[in-house]
Image (cartoon, rainbow, N blue to C red; front, side, top):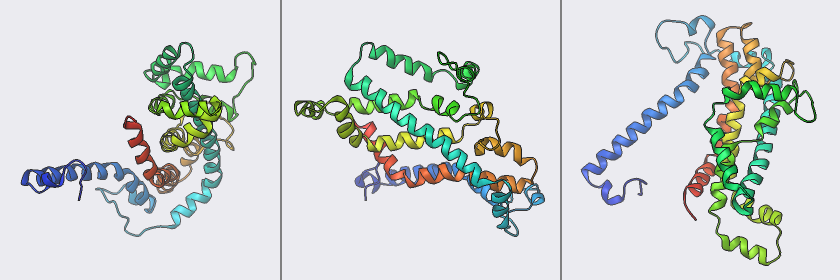
Length: 289
């Protein structure tokens, strides 16, 4: 059986088996460390408020209180909060995929004037912490240049900033650069326009890498707190990451943990369901074709 980083011959040697066991042990430790917060949040939601603060590390509750999750769902109005989050994140991911794929295709295949300088400009923005431009971003949202429209308390105040991602453009451009030129030239000879090449050739070939970008964008936008906190003041439109801050003080810690665990389920389930496609996309994006 092929173990990936060791050949079958190497695995039969004592040194190979030792390396294999060490690597597996390290990966198990990393997995436990990564999964511990999720498990702790889940089991804490099954405890009573006083039991959470009991001495020592007690991961499992003495008596699981499964009704905590139903109470948290009702009292925190989780259905509305999750709906708000899905609307915000879904719109942001959709716009980001459309704009990033079009920008990456233009920079990679259409070769506009100054494409190299534009790409360098995108990469420079990756070096700037998001908190550094939160004030000018807020002022821009409050008074949109040229049209002078106030987008505060509107989902467009989040969708527009979310729609542009230098990271997504860079990843997609890197993939588009590796698509064989012969395929595109054949389509041009057959009379296909640039948009038709993008729609019927580029996008189907990039399906796996687009799924990777989609999952990364979904997770990043779902966990965003500061920008929604600043631009959305209406409680009925706030996402779960913001609204839980206001509601948590009115309930016990156990219900807070239960609500928090429910809130982290969507990106976790999305990553698990699309893991197979993500692995394929990462492999394709890392191999020069």
